[in-house]
Length: 298
Length: 194
Image (cartoon, rainbow over all chains, first blue to last red; front, side):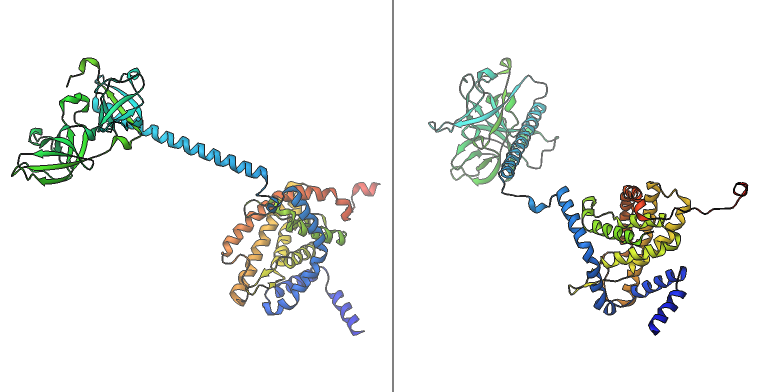
């Protein structure tokens, strides 16, 4: 009875705005209650309230799954997925092949530009060639390249590696599409030795040490030095040989690896020069062909 | 006004927020349908019911957004969204006079204002709990309150966009809600002549 009266009293007092602010006050009180007072009962209330929502949520989830299927439905082993993955891999391979090809072409263009700038306005013809084989029947280690008379290649055409390295010399009268090259390492070369750090332009080039390099065991050249001019390891050997034409002059050949005393000639020395690059290690080379009027017979 | 319809609409909106709403999620921003329902009711129901409408929806939002505690249990705090919705209602009700309240675009704007104010209060209540009680961490921890307000601002904007078609749809069901359409009759010369 008292409870009924209390309820009637409260409902008579609480209406309109007063009820609203009372509810706000209760909400504020609940909002700042410590967790230990809320935890025992609010979770239960939430569970009860969620009961009517669960079927609606199931319906919503079904609709969502229909519109956007869950990722778990994706079968990684499905044949079409495997086929697509294989196609993607093939496309990646093609892409990487193209990139490597572009890289090789850029290298080729760069070395052609480099050689062309060295040659200036001379009428030397340049041709890119691929090393297609090493002749196993000859001790000279001759190398075949895939350019020949059809491309303008002639005997004594110079083969250049890496832009400015003497790679060898065409030694035959080429066939239409193939030429045979003697690698630089099998040639006797007249060279001059330059300091690695560069040369003072004012210095007379005749003061630089010259020598004739001969093929030696172990993939190096050796040359005799009779003068007492100072030589250091690491100096760069550049071609000065008149036999190889103007195109080859000044090309780099190798680096001084060792300086040894010549035991047979007191006071003389022997330099050991290692090549910068080997023709057999290259896949692409450049062949420089001088015009007929400029060719010189060795 | 039929309260049963309002409660049902709130339940449907809450269920939609928890299920189908994920489709509308852009990045970390998921719009909510519940503010649209509340704003629609606030715009159409008698003013005297406005605060109670908002408080009821706020309690529902609080009950269905528990915080996971460190020990893995969940804690439901009733109040942050309840008070937030109450403040949102205090701001939205005056807009009835300023906006053409049956226009869905006006409704969308009101939803944004409502959601923004509600989220500010929500963050403020949790900051108070954090500073005074130090017993539970808010759901956005270890982010800052400002970043949460910014995030909720984006949610408010998204809710406003979703609110435009939602309010348009709810307006089509106006008859079911049983809102009073009686107009106040003002005595005047024409009436006296009649």
